[in-house]
Image (cartoon, rainbow, N blue to C red; front, side):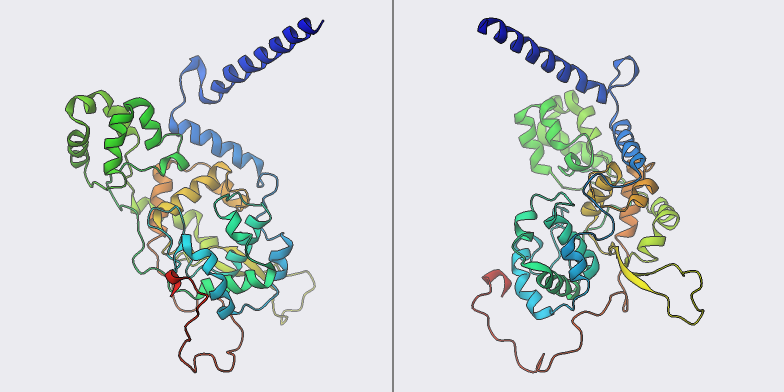
Amino acid sequence: MKHNFLMKLNLALLIFTLTFFLGVPSIYAVEGDKPMSAEEMRKAAAAKAAALAKPPPGGKWKATAKEALEALKLVGDVEEGEEIYTVCAACHFPTGWGDPLGVFPQLAGQHTTVMIKQISDIRAKNRDNPTMYPFAMQIEGAQDIVDVCSYIQTLKMNPNPRIGPGGPDWMLSNLRKEVWPISLDKIEQKVGNANFKKLKTIEEKEFKSKKEFLEALNNTIGAEEFKKHEAVILKNAHWETDLALGKTLYEKNCVKCHRDHGQGNFQETMPVIEGQKADDKPATEAAYYPVIAGQTYLYLLRQFSWIQIGKRRNANPDMVKQIKGFSFIDMKSVVDYAGRFKMQEGDWQEVGGEDEAGWGDDEEEEDDDKPAFMK
């Protein structure tokens, strides 16, 4: 009897395994078992995300986390925030500029309201960010959140952030594993480990012409190996952007929320209530449209793609629907255009309340508790 039970169990497991592994490829195939192209796969994911008309379960566009709602009512203490920022500086750097490859974004100059929402969402698991989660959990409550976010807003932005190519560009980048169903890592499966290690030596190096890129590949892995793997390598390397196209797309799709020079918005006016007196001051509430001016190109590209395919669960559902039809050239071009904007005086909400007595009167004292990289 026990033998029959085990046979039935093994049979059930076999059926499940075959169903799973035979069923999965259907996601990546079209009629006639023809493999879907990367563009088709992205469009299918984008259409599915847009059809939801709201973020997937858990994520919310407006602040809903209890800590965020509490923090938005508090006044931030910039000096306290500087101390708390030591938790963040290891990845985002003491300057708040992040890294040029876009793994860690530029935080400097970001609206306090935006940062409050994002940190609170990560802590509440309304936004998936396993790298930042353990660091975010070291912040102790709403007051600390508003303090550190207020400090971050006062940091001077990178005057020379990494921008997109603004034209022809060829590059091998592992960013593709996060924004596309193909990547430099995927190439390893095709070209082999030895060739892959050689290709890694020119990773993230930009080439402004296809001819120059082909010569570099030829010199890196040799003519014979390159000829054998040329198609799959080139498929991963074309990063051209069109700034004229980016401008058109931005003005048509983005300016309403991110405004005329990418300054975002920390406050929006509520609709006028019926019966409200004409001389009544319109009510306002916190807004969460981030600064994209001066943000790192590759970070913008990653986040744009994640929003499009529904991975960024706390994104604005209106944006998900707005960009569902964007192609990869559209995506690259619009973020390349938007990242070149510069912030202007008056774009930020004042933080920290009234100046406290003694601020700036004395030279800053050395803080023995501050990590060396922050001094």
